[in-house]
Image 1 (cartoon, rainbow, N blue to C red):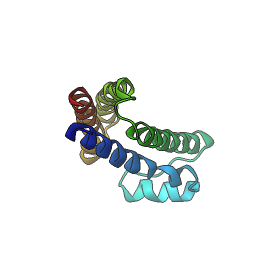
Image 2 (image 1 turned 135 degrees about the vertical axis):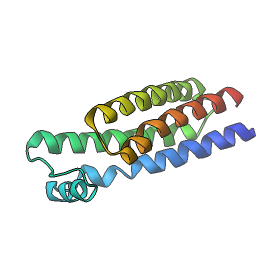
Image 3 (image 1 turned 180 degrees about the vertical axis):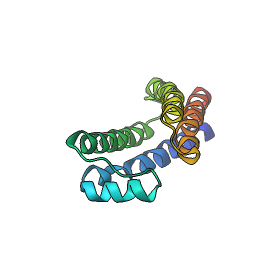
Length: 132
């Protein structure tokens, strides 16, 4: 296994582990989501089934993405084209979320911590896969 492959495997697993941390948030009660929302300085957490649905489904999608990162990390040669797609998707997601965050007026630290790191991750995945 080349150095690039080992690094790619490590980055995919670290990313997967971080994304899997969203799993408990699928099951948190509304009040806990609200408390976190308010502690983050995002204002009063709205009530309604669509709010809980969106919070839980977003958490589930992050967790599923984390599991997917773990899956492809076990054979980076075999899943090379999938990893490139994952990298391209991450760049697109990061750019889109940066625009969305800015449009919604989210705090600077939220925007800086969401979109730009996803863009960097995507570029790193593509570069490492191409070197592997």
